[in-house]
Length: 368
Image (cartoon, rainbow, N blue to C red):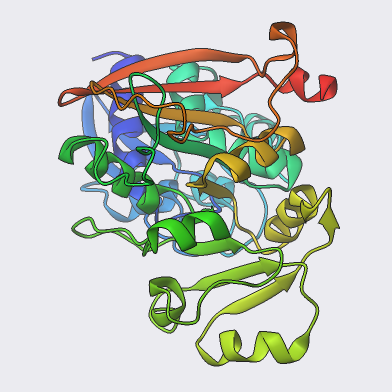
């Protein structure tokens, strides 16, 4: 086996931490000695030991003289756990092979530098693209302090998210819906608007075996969400946050009694200031959001420049009708050249449905 093979093993291990390590990165590590894997591990939970220390703890023999393959540059600072560079130096590892650089200012090359200063051979950039892909959320969050936002919607092939009656269950099949629950597990929070709550009365929980419920965030400018809605009724069981421009503390109290948290946010152009909301959520270490809003919230989010990625689930159906709902409503752009451009598209078949995932070109935000 060669370096890329061992790094692939480490990347496969890293994915096991998906949904459990936020806002930390997913990291995997493999120890190899004389052509044999003698230890492996991954970052399993936020606040728990990092991948390198887990690999060392799982060693079947002494790691002295071994090579460590790790998907992300080892940390060199004290956080929830001691620095991994310290553990590497103490156990006599001879060589470290790294996939991604860590953009965290507390690391950012310092981990590599520290290892080299102590005579350890360091090889960088092995399977870099694959390792970078693992932690797009972490890289965005650590560099901006704001959540990575994925705008998700399901529509028919004629672009409808509901029939003219408002009926929308179900547009996609079970395979596609299972993928949505995997993403609710993956991302720290799921966000919807008051329109979605009033129309669909959703739960917004993760219904996947062994999954984790995300924080539920509701954008409700005037605090109109019914106390009888499923989300409010289950707020004691599943963390629920309401972002609102309503400052009436008396109006807040019934929601607080039901187990909700409330974040007051300024109003901008008749809706919540979503940029301010992202800053507030970032301060609370919410590193990622699955935006499951309706057309109005989707348009507002695009205008505010908070959307990083778009997930379009497309079902082989046609609803027709001039009054059928579309995934992005609002005023819309006035000219094709003012569109929000998407790039790096990836297409996945999920049963009979198709998922198209694209990144939003950030420079476009300056044009709106």
